[in-house]
Length: 189
View 1 (cartoon, rainbow, N blue to C red):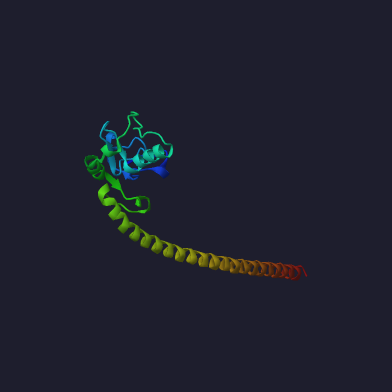
View 2: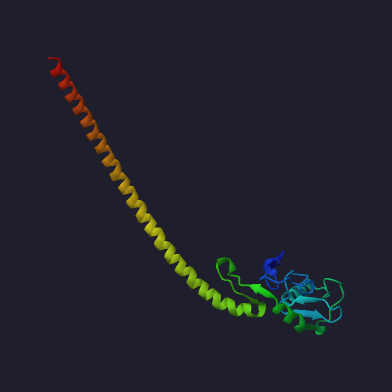
């Protein structure tokens, strides 16, 4: 399993999945460190970034009123010569991934291109499974609580019976002692 970790996950432009196939380095965005999502290629230098990552560097250049440069080689980018990289997009979408619900029991694996459709179905099913599980868990907890109360009640009754038994045993021992004393006195007379 190959999980690409992003240092800035909240601004990731790439796909954040549990990949079960090794991800070739040339399919990983150098900005977000995830496999490309909607990759764009800069024609002049050939560098490729996720669309969202490219948009962030473009927004940064506009905000700071500086020229838009490729962050890897610092060449000025002609925005009219940036294009969608369909080839790399097809490669990334064919990578094998696990369902994000794998940790809670979903065993689905498949191509990344099928993952979103699966997630819509799985999450719906997983929610139903989780709800059903929670209902069953609540029933079991209620039954366990009721059993604990019954056990405590029975333990209390058992303790009372043990006390009664101890008292009866003491009475019997006292009566035996008295009988022994009477027998002993009648023999000595």
